[in-house]
Image (tube, rainbow over all chains, first blue to last red):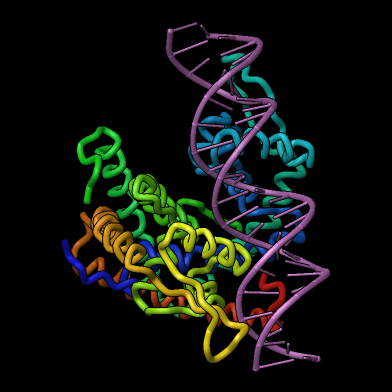
Length: 158
Length: 158
DNA sequence: TATTGTTATACTCTATAACTATA
DNA sequence: TATAGTTATAGAGTATAACAATA
C-alpha cells in the first residue's frame, strides 16, 4: 500500500475542515434565534419539499431516526412543526411546518446564504460552479460505492 | 435578502453531505481495529507533525480541549500515545505516539487512502486537483472571515 | 495575573434494541 | 410477519465553568 499519505491534501480532511468551520459559525449565529444545526436541517428540508414522512425526513437530513423522533417532539412543543398521523397509513407520521416554523425558517435563510457567501467569496464564479459540480458528482460516486460495499462486494476495501 | 435558496446547490450542504458519507463508511471500517474518527484525527496529526502539545493538538484536530484531555487519557490507557509533562513548561503536556500507536496508525492509513480513492474515483485528475485547490482556498477565506467576525466587524452578517 | 490542562455538570446526538400499533 | 415510529439505556462529544499547577 502507498505510504505517501499527506493530511494536507487529503480530500476527506479538506471537506471536513471547511464544512465544520462553516457549521461552527452558522451555529453561533442561529442559536439566539432558537435554532440549532439539526433544527435547521429539518426546517430547510421541510421548506424545500413540503410535508415529510418521518422516516424519509430522517434519511434526507441524515439524522438518526430515534434522535429525529424526539427532536420532532421538541420542535412541536416549540410550535415549529406539527406531527400528525398519515391518513393513508396509520403507522406513518407526517411532519409539517407551522406558520411559526415557516417564519423562523425564513429568518434563517438569509443567514445561511450569508455563510455560503462567506465561504465562496474569493472564489470566481467559475470556481464556485466547478466546486458544486464536483461535489455533486463525488456524492453520486460515494452512494454507488456505499451500495457496492453494503452488497458485500468489498467488505474490506483496503 | 434573496429568497432563492435551493438546498441542492447550497455549498455547505454539499460539503457536509459528502464529508459525512465518507466519515460514516470510514468509521465502520476502522471500528474493528479499535479506532474511532476522533482517535484517527489524533493519530494522523501525530503521524504528520510528531509530538504535539495538548492545546495545539486540540486546535489542529478541531476537538474540544476538555474532550481531548479525556480522549488522550483513554488513548494512553490503550497504549497508543504517551502523555508527559513538557520539560520547557511545567504546565504543558506533550503527546507522543507509542510504537503501538504508530502501528495502528499505519494500519489505518491504507483504509483512509481507500476511502479517499472511493470519493474521487470517477473524477478526472484535473477535477481532483481543482477540488483540492478550491477547498484550500475556501478554507483560507473562512479563516479570514472568522477573524473579521470575531473582531466584531460583522457581528450579524445577515 | 495569565496560561495550561483537569474535572464536573448538563445537554445533545448516536447506537442498539425492545416495544406498540398498524399493515 | 413486516413496517413505522417510540422509548430506554449506554456511550461519545460539546459547552461552560470552576479548579490546580505553573509561569
